[in-house]
Figure (cartoon, one colour):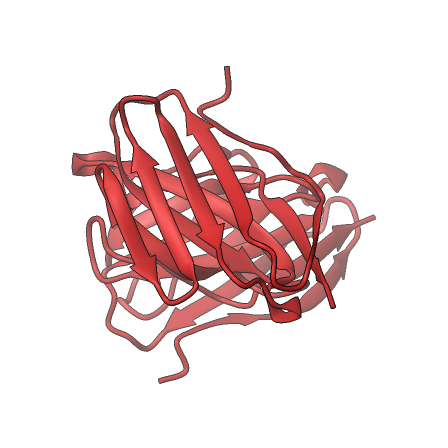
Amino acid sequence: NAGVTQTPKFRILKIGQSMTLQCAQDMNHEYMSWYRQDPGMGLKLIYYSVGAGITDKGEVPNGYNVSRSTTEDFPLRLELAAPSQTSVYFCASSRGRGETQYFGPGTRLLVL
Amino acid sequence: QKEVEQDPGPLSVPEGAIVSLNCTYSNSAFQYFMWYRQYSRKGPELLMYTYSSGNKEDGRFTAQVDKSSKYISLFIRDSQPSDSATYLCAMSPWGAGSYQLTFGKGTKLSVIP
């Protein structure tokens, strides 16, 4: 199993551009989530999904959108990128409620 | 008061020392408690996972949860240079919110050979 994979590893965006961060898992996990991690800070939940077709906002959803059309994939969309979205983005998945969450390697995003 | 407080360090110890890492929290609904280890430029990896109060041991690592004090700890015995990383505590409540982890800021640990 590849586990949780994320692409790209690193990206530079100009202010106002948009992009999609990809996340995929091959463990047949129902639950997936997106976090962002700023320097010296813990991870903050952006969006999560408890199954295909079901998504909900986390602590810091503004400026982001998600969709979950399949169990395997959970892309994160940034519209109109802003410097405040410069961060490292992690995707995670777990089998279910209260289960261990497995994290991907992260995507480093720089908005200039 | 933040939901989860964790001293960011940095913490520097000699090889072989016992390391104590701690978090306090304010939300009494938290039932699941985790410690993640994060190496530089890598994703967090689960180190220890406990449910409710008590102790859990895994090799050189021991996790303790004291719900009455809202305090969790991670002890590392016989610390090694390979333990040098940032340690993040995380927790979640029972029920519908159990999918949502709340993280501490992380403590950066350096083990000096």
